[in-house]
Image (cartoon, rainbow, N blue to C red; front, side):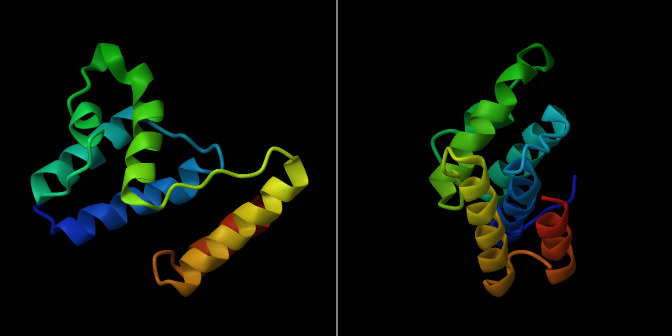
Length: 115
C-alpha cells in the first residue's frame, strides 16, 4: 500500500466521488481500500473508519457509507429531484470541480458530455 498524505487521500476520495455521483458506483472494495488509505494518511471523519473496516460480507454497505464520507468531507453532491435540473446541476458541479483544480479538465469534460 502506497503511503499518501492526507491531501492526496482526500483527492483520491474526491476523484471517486466524481464518478460515483453520476451513478457509476464501481467496486465496493475500491471504496473500502480508498477509505483505508485515507484513514492511514490521517483523514478523520465519523464514517471513514466504518467504511474502511467493512468486511467482504458487509460490502453492500460501502456505497451508503461512502456517501456519508464525502458529505462529511464537504464535497458531496445531491442533485435536484427533477431529472433535467439534476443533470444541469451535476454538470455545473463538475465544472466547478474543474475550476477548483479537483478534477482534470479532460476527465470533467468526459463526465459532462457522457452525463
